[in-house]
Amino acid sequence: MRVARQESEAALGVLEAIRDSLRLVGGALPSGLEDSVRLDGSLTAALARALPEERRPAAETARRFAILLARRRQLGFLGAVTASIRARLDQAAGTVLVQVESGQPLAAENRADLRQALLARTGARDVRLEEKINPALWGGLRLRIGWERIDGSLLGRYESLADALGVDPRGALNGQV
Image (tube, rainbow, N blue to C red; front, side):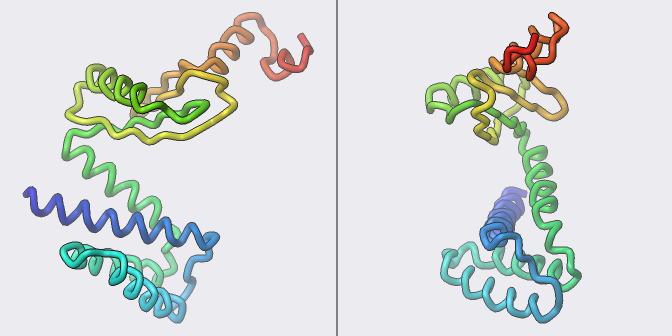
């Protein structure tokens, strides 16, 4: 079972790399069989250069899957497929995904403290943090754990206060109370 998980993780890593590479070229995804043949050649060469020998079996599986999607004109679903695979692997491992939105990058010490607090709160074996920077938050954090949302940002507190006072928070920012 452990070997299968390692192979799945390796194949997922390759699929995520393929997805990210396609995003870097401006989302110009292959649309037909001719394009998938070009994609096949470039993927084969890139994966052979980038991956160590022990990861090549997983790379071959991922490459074939990406080519299949391209041939069926479904390569746009690669992001959703990788997210779904990642979620299933995390679930099987007892890992909880937490999306963290902050006004600036988290310091290593803060990230470790947050991880410990989330482990205690969720009872999971591990926590995987997906961090996103949103300068509009001013400070604090917004967390999403599954369907649960926790807003500890200054912007969230300001919006709650504005709502309690019955004013539009955007108007209050511009002096329109």
